[in-house]
Image 1 (cartoon, one colour):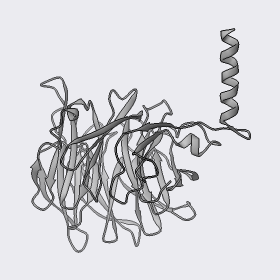
Image 2 (spheres, rainbow, N blue to C red):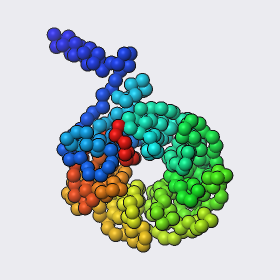
Image 3 (cartoon, helix red, strand yellow):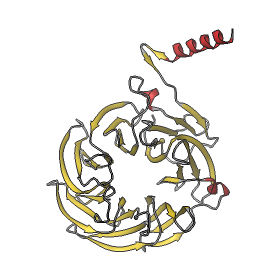
Amino acid sequence: MMSRLLYFISVLLLAAACRGDELVMVSDTQDTGAATASSNLAGMYVLCEGNMGTNKASVDYLDLSGSGATVTYLRNIFPERNPGEVKELGDVGNDIKVNGRQLWMVINCSNMVVVATADSCRKIAKIDIPNCRYVEFSGAYAYVSSYVGPVEVGDAHRGRVYKVDTLTFAKVDSVTVGFQPEEMAVADGRLYVANSGGYLLDSSERTVSVVDLATFSVAGSIDVAPNLHRLRADKHGRLWATTRGDYWGLPSRLYCIEIGPDGVMSLKDSVDVPVSDLCIVGDSLYYIGVEWSYETGRNEFSNGIVDIRTCGVLSSRLSASPEFEDIELPYGIIVNPADRDFYIMDAKDYLSSGQLYHFSADGTYDWRVWTGDIPGHAAFVYERP
């Protein structure tokens, strides 16, 4: 009798979820209990990487629009908004950005960039790019960094940056840069590319490449440090680059790079803090860092704020709230540019659901919610989905 009842309930649920011949996967909604934020942000997308090989990359959405009584978090919205697509996004979500009315998601090991509507997360295009890493925009084009070669330690393929038309989604050009390029930044008509050399077995790749966007050719480079990763431009005409170190004796560090009027780069300063992710708002660089310590035999966490005018550390702690200590593996950070409240993405054990923490500008804990697996990348949206 019980088995018949369960079967009947299953049939009803399946029927309720169907739209014609399509099965609609309903997203999981969580109430944060917080009042709607005062800024003009409509919401925030969170890209969860999913463990490599599991094809579990997913995208969540934080609704800040004020459409409900409180702020709500919607987990795994892509299947619901795109019932004709496969349930998950693919293998390893590596970057997410909003460009105008478009939402761009870089799915690394699935070798594709998925473009959706920024207001509803409905898929409008898929662009095939091998071993793609990060996306940046300038004018009518998107620029996608690519390792080109397979996911393989010791691979010596030079990387490329692909130029994609944001209207037709066609790849219109590409340029060869250094080994295993990561993040990029645009400043004064030039594209700067952080080359990691992450697949190489030595520390030979240490450069940031500069690409002239008018000719789409490499115009120069600067030696910084091995295993570069993050790269962001500030409002003072400088670049901020991070290195992962060599996971042994060479530590992760933050570097400031000056850009001359001719685009030539010079190393200005370094900050003696490990940085895994960062977000620049005004003259403040918010950072989190995770670095393995062979002395303690565990990951050591760091966080704080750097004054980008002086390259000095303003604060070595983002929050004094006891809930901040509950964060197991800080993996991503994003700061509201208007109110300076901030969000920390906690990857936990890299295998199961993570959490998103929200703190006010003064570091006071506000709320937390469960996310998809390995939340690591986020983007604000200004149009209600």
